[in-house]
Image 1 (tube, rainbow, N blue to C red):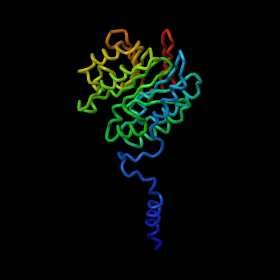
Image 2 (cartoon, helix red, strand yellow; image 1 turned 60 degrees about the vertical axis):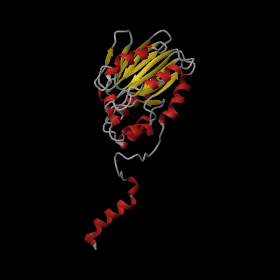
Image 3 (spheres, rainbow, N blue to C red; image 1 turned 180 degrees about the vertical axis):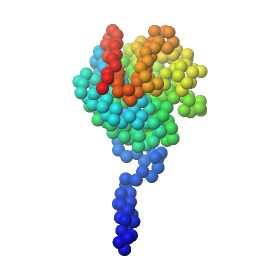
Image 4 (cartoon, rainbow, N blue to C red; image 1 turned 90 degrees about the vertical axis):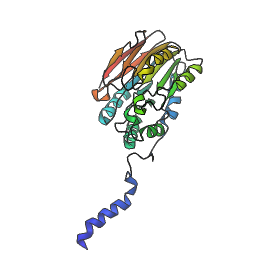
Amino acid sequence: MIKHFPILLLLSILVEGCDYIEYHPYDLDIAGEENIHAKNIPLIEERCEGRETIRFAMISDTQRHYDETEAAIASINSRDDIDFVINGGDVSDFGLKREFTWMRDIMNKLTVPYVCLLGNHDCQGTGEEVFKRVFGPENFAFVTGNIRFICLNTNAMEYDYSRPVPDFRFIDDQLRNTPEEATRTIFAMHVRPGEFQFNNNVAKFFEYCVQQFPDPIFCIFGHEHHWIAEDLFQDGLMYYGCPSIEKRNYLVFTVTPENYSYEMVDF
């Protein structure tokens, strides 16, 4: 009987601990908080209502870099001047459910509200569905003061052109229904035009659409893991690329009624 004790002990642990077993890394049985954006976007809009100056931080490509993300959040929390945070996408590396929930739990330690963009790595497996369950739709928008943020899924190559990415119907709907108070616009995306993941057959038309919005200020993106500041279409509209969190830095943008500025913060 004694020689069978280790086997019996293992069976007992397995039976009693069945709630801790992950049956499949790509299942959709989400543990913990869902629909983060549905809660956080109203908080962002409330914090910034009536404000002429806003200041937000951007981190990106947090995939598998949990310690660095924790450190970045501690750095952001140590400040008292950040209104909200944007994660520029690639929350996960393999589209695994556990990656999304781990990163959600880390991001929830922020003392200010946040949103996450959909990255190309987030589209692997059932990743996009998990992203939508945990955070919200792939395309979304919100208003801070008088600035409209248009946040887009631009990971066209992940769909092999089987669906419209970027979704121009969404973009047109946002243009047609621009809130009266939104007199300026910032576009946020994971992949910028010109990068192979973007559907560059429509890159020029995309930029045309962007320019139709009220006073586009600049565009922000992630994906390329290093700092980029470029006038992509030589039309005066700057595109700013956020480094991977692995580089141990993040961006802070300050937008005033007359202009904007940015800083790279090392942590």
